[in-house]
Length: 128
Image 1: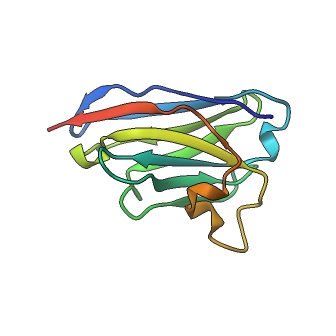
Image 2: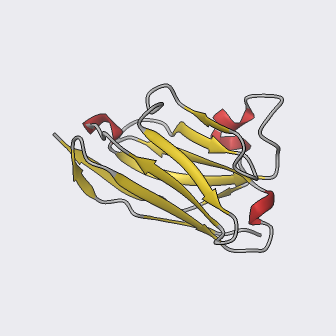
């Protein structure tokens, strides 16, 4: 079993930056594809970014491409989401998820129900 704990969310002004972290327990973290999702107020959870087990492949939602960067440090069992040029519409609870499926062959990583493990989420609020 893998447990995920997100951190780094807070209130920030539009145009600012934040780095979210997702720390994982367990020795198999380096085997997992990791993803970031977010749930804006009153809306469904949506895909933000995903990264392969070795960091060699990344995918982004169009709405964050060029502003957000996903990365991972397997030695620290942590995946990050660097968020720059934040907009009010980025306001959401951000979740990280993990799954053993490899990040190629299909677009499964876009669907939250495909992930085996989830953190509790961290709130990001962007003020205008």
